[in-house]
Length: 632
Ligand code: MG
Ligand code: MG
Image (cartoon, rainbow, N blue to C red; front, top):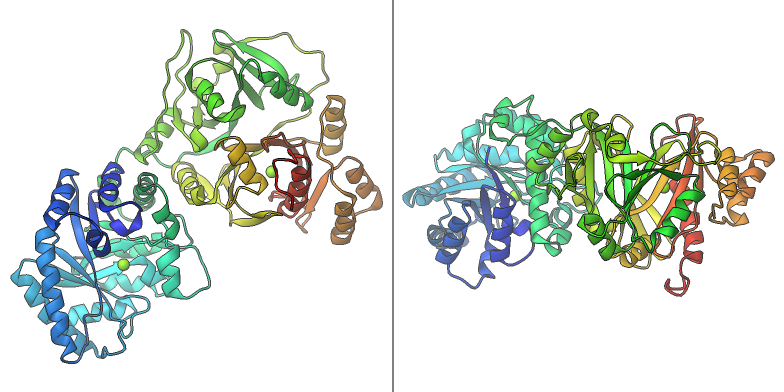
């Protein structure tokens, strides 16, 4: 199935838009008239640019307020259409999108509208063009695809067909099953857009908040299943009105769009096997079993600070790379992870990540079933494959570029001996046995505008689910938090998007020059025992004010003895009200806003202590470079 996108969906001028659309792998493009009008070249220049990029023009849009007019406006509407047909001829566009009229002067009546479309079809046919009718959700008389279809059916003209747009149908909650009865060859094009569920005026919702399929909350897959049942085989075309996207990088928004379509088609393989034929080599979504390692880049001169932080969490050097300045740290006595790696090489990506961001966690190693298949899927979805020169005896670990210029490595069964092959054990430390048992979650921070991009990146490549987005209150602004969890429960990521640089998350983005991993949360089996052991290791924890514990008592009615223990150890607490409890200890934040967290989950608690975030952030902001952080 061919993919297409409307020029209005991304930013830049028409030249930049077309280049980005072609580079992302789309087959076709809808020319949005305003983009053409704002362009400083002729229609023939545009036609040539489109052809040079190997794209086809899927349609020209929009032609507004055409149908149902009384004379003399009716005659003028036909004249207007003829002018646009002239332009389409020069542009090489064969299909015109006519959206339903919003004019107060427009008259209703299915037969009147059908007659108008029949007449328009005659004029289009004379030029070898076609017209498609789309019901706007806010159209005056036609605002439902079922009525638009009835107009098209009665127009009874081979050059007049229906245009379906998922947003217009789904935003009004129109039953998608009604699509199944429409003959597929009468649907001239299908436009797709998702949107977050928002309780607002549908026109404003459509013009500003549309997003790529899979980024919002609309049941796009149900809509598509109904479309596929009609036998429709034309292009799937994205038409996304979103202020943020238009302000974003044309290249990356176009990649998101193409990724969303490939992912959508992939998800429909079972109901529409014919879709598979048009998909690239695309292994099914990849299950992730766990985090095998987190790798930090730190120079030899500065790594001492990081080593001290690891040691304070009970980690000790476990093994040294046989040929590189790389050391893996583990909990003493642990037969496996958590594995923290410090890479102090003076070349390669670790070094450039250090030069760009300072000490930072630039790579994450994920355990998957088939590392090569993971990279094949990621590549087909537009991710950038990462390779760098290997030294003698080093394993080829498949990898892709991830957030913040970092890397995701994939470790499967065939690579499980990487620690033995590439690393030589160091003498066992004379420290108490391990305190921390695993990695609970990794928090990645980004500008708010990038959140949809990275959520789609993870949800399209991996078998993960998104939890509803929550707002975290930072005293200086809002931070949106989106949890991504693997369906196998092995990996949890929290994506945090800051809308300004005065929040702790925004401070981190600024200070780390756009690094991504802001905090890592480790698991333990007994928070109080872990707390004591960490104190013995020199752990500097975040102090939590007494007011927090007074409030805890009020909220949960905890036993005084428990409250006393929590308060004495600066442990944050949350309960889900159904027997699930959550305990959190935070480290002091580093000057750039990075920090560590240790948690214990009891009784199936599934959250992240969101209610505690405001206290944690306020406490961290008090101690992070007070001079650099604005007073609040
Ligand atoms: Mg549309
Ligand atoms: Mg956390």
